[in-house]
Image (cartoon, rainbow, N blue to C red):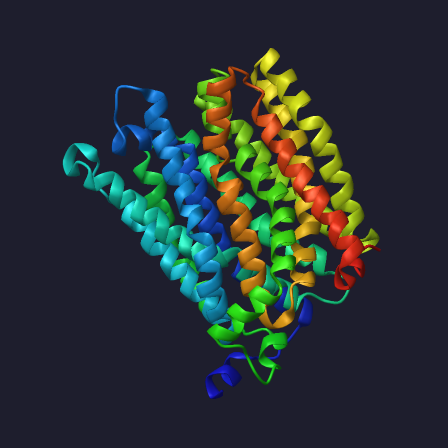
Length: 425
């Protein structure tokens, strides 16, 4: 308790202290998304290095499957590391996840390829991705909960939206690095070089008052029991997140591959589009959060998921009918608007409907399940759908499925959960 007491410092200036904490806590979220995005950007090069073969499609699918495998570890990380965070503190959890993420990133960056290690190379890449996925299982939840607990009254949507907004800075930075045409290892090493700075920023975080003021914290068994008891909220939360995670990985990590291998545009064009998407997301996320503070979470979520449901496939069909830099950019910016506005409201909403005692683990489990089942495999699913149907717009159908799940969960929560209905208006 003495250690905790020292870590809780009253801010000199509340607004300045909150802004500083937002930057500090979101900085680690930047590394998580930078690493995941770089893997998606350089999937073709990683495939050639670790999964060489005569069939480029098979090699690319193995690389995307490895990309997706990291997401399978997220639910486990959400439970184990989420329970640790709900027990030991928001600050302690954020430092632990950053350390694990750094280990996974470094292991991939320095690993020799298949030509040197043979079968051990892809297996070790997979191991590195699993470590990254395990840590990422609670990274996003830890950041979102921290921001929710330090947000001023009536501003939670806006403040929590910066969790996702920090990821967009990583998307933009990764796209800029990609346009410099480095080999694929250099961007990973750049991520490793940022780790000491990120540790410095996070180590100076103060514990949230909401956590520090509680007299008891659940142990691991209590956390598991509570998650089981609230499994309905977790399942509906996962449905909410599906809209977010499928949309995000399509318009960011998959765009360079989609632009080059499906639309046959230059890598530079595809990366510039991705950079513009990151900037667009960075604008719409806080606006969506602020709008939800004003008119309610669910009206924003219903409107955006309904628009995504009816427009995703037609927009992609229009784009692939006349592929160009302009049509790719226009289609992606529309999807960016829907994703950013929805997610700006949804992330805060999810922190509000999960019980406080298991807020980090419950939020993280819902998010991780959606990412593991749907979002993380979006590049692989999109590649398979195009290959199986010969319809280059079929990823739009996958986006529509995600939107339908988010819309359904929003209506169900609005009608059946008292704690959810408070955020309608």
